[in-house]
Length: 181
Image (tube, rainbow, N blue to C red; front, side, top):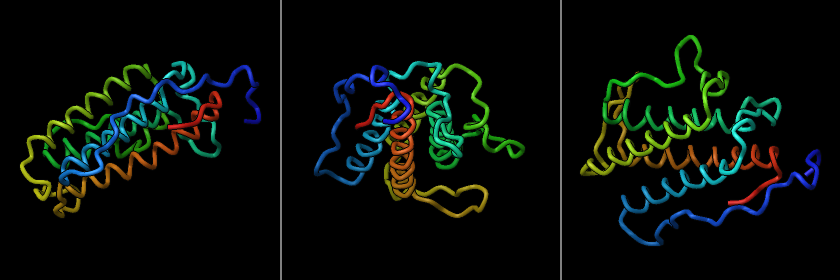
């Protein structure tokens, strides 16, 4: 890759530790496995990046960084599963009406802490999905009050991660030349 000296290219990726989604199974098994696979993919794309480089915004004019993406994904997990579907009254992590792009713009704090919070939000989401008897169960989304099923939330989350896995791949390649997964 142009701009990165050959000696700075990343070593080959660590072994692929992702759990392969099953080829067959019921709807809940397939959807949750594919979502977890994308979560694991995102984490692998960020693994091995020095903490001081995770906040680099190196794809102009985009304001994306790996640190910003993990903060964004924390909030997306919290928003859909805890705030919208489960109706939990928990505060936003990196959002306010006055500053809706805090997740990407205000990269203060420790990236390692951001990854820990993201993992905790993923665990909360898994618990909510596990205790919901049917993927057809709905919740009323704010602010429009329209119903949305857990099934649709899972599909939307898979889409969200697939998009951001691609962003993470590009960001990682700009940092150290590593591509894959």
